[in-house]
Every structure is written in C-alpha cells, then in structure tokens.
Image (cartoon, rainbow, N blue to C red; front, side):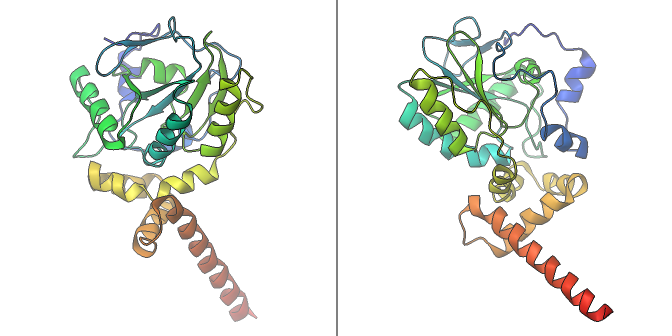
Amino acid sequence: MPTTPHTPTADAGETYRFTRFRTSLLIDDLTFSPDAPAPGDHVPAFDLPVLDGGRFTSTDLGPRPVLLVFGSRTCPVTESAGPILNTLHREFGDRARFVLVNTREAHPGQHFDQPRTDDEKRRHADELRRHHAVPFEVAVDDLDGGLHRAMSPKPNSAYLIDSSGVIRFRAHWANDARGLHAALTDIVSGRVPHRDRSRAMAGPLLRAVGHLPGVVGFAGGRVEREIWLAAAPLALLSRVSRLLFRWLPKDLRGSAAATSITAVMVLLVAVAIGVAR
C-alpha cells in the first residue's frame, strides 16, 4: 500500500476522488495554494509502490536529482507532456531519475472512471505507462492522493528535487519543454536551476487543447458535456480545433483555434461598430 504521513478524512478522500469535472476544479488547477511545497522546501515524506516492483520514497531518492511528474490517462496536458518527457529522459535519464506518479483521473468518464480500489488504481497506472510508452519509473499514489494532495494537486505538475530532498524547480505543467530542459541542464551539472519555477501558463494549456478530443474519445462523451458546463471556452477551443485544424499537429491546434476565434470576434465587433455608425 502507498503510504504518506497524511491520513485523509473520508470527506477529503471523496472530494479528491471526484466523478464529475466542475468549474471549481479548474479554478483550483490554475494556482498553487500559498502553503504548497515550493522551491527551497523539502518534499513531503512519501513511500509509494512502483510498477514492476520497488519503491519510490522520500528517504531514499538515490544519488541523482529526481524529476517527479504527476499525471493521469485522462489529462490532456499529460497527453501533450508524454512525448516531451520521453525526449527529456533520452537526454538526461542517465544523470537524473525520472518518476511519473499516477494520480486521480483529471477527466473521469463512463468508459474510464475514477479508480475505486488499489487494484484499479494500479491498472490505471499500467494504462498510463502503456499509452505513453513511458521508459522510466511509474509510481502509484494512494486512492486519496496522499502525495498529490500534499503537493497541492495539479493535473500535470513537475518538480526537480535534489538528492537531499529539496525542491529546486517547480513547473505548473509538465509540457513546458523549454523550462524543464533548462532546469535539468542546470541541475545535472551540479548547479541550482537559474529559474526556480516555470511561469508558463497559456502556452501549455493551448498545447493541451488539441489533445482534449482524444481524451473524450477514450474516457467517454460525458467528459465533453461536463467541460461545456464547467469551462465553456475550453470546450469551444477543443471543438474548433477538432473541426477546423485536424491537419495540424495536436500541440498546435489549440493556438490555431484561439487565433481563429479571436479573429472572428474582432471582425464581429468591427461590423457592429460599422452598423452603429
């Protein structure tokens, strides 16, 4: 069983293991809580099982720095981050330990819901690893997200931790390839990263938009309905990216959709002003 020093209440566990995506979850995802572990802090204590055996523990991180990433199979940001993480691992995997921690599902649906047992959680981790062909360790958080909640749960955050357990870099989204590459370059060279956190927000989210239709197709159509209710602009971007920009790589579809919607809005405003005159 995964263990952390945090013993969640039944209410906290139910809140963490939501079954319907809501606006409040999106709002929470956009900011770290003031007391969230930050660069310079020690990572909270944890002890998690790793697929295929072994443990990922705060007391034995190993001699190399660790890139700790949270993710799930139904997270569109994780979808866009998968190839980036695999590329980073090819470059830095001999000098840094990479660990992907499977969390709650970001967008549970009727075909791939929140896991309800430890065995289901492990199977979800297996599916996450298989889908992204992850070549490094995949650890499994407990059902109530002991480690994930202790770090201020974000769908796809990433942390660079030195061998003593001190956080040296924090990324809100693990698909920030430039920020993670720069931080890894510093830390494997024995330097504290020049920037201690990623400030990229809009870019990573737009890169994820083109992956949202694939998540809906995998998890179930209920997910799209929930996103329309909870985050209509995001759902609109996803719909436009799917209908008009299938010919583009998925990472570019969100930006193209945002540009086209903005252009239409500007045109409509210009027409309205012209009519008013």
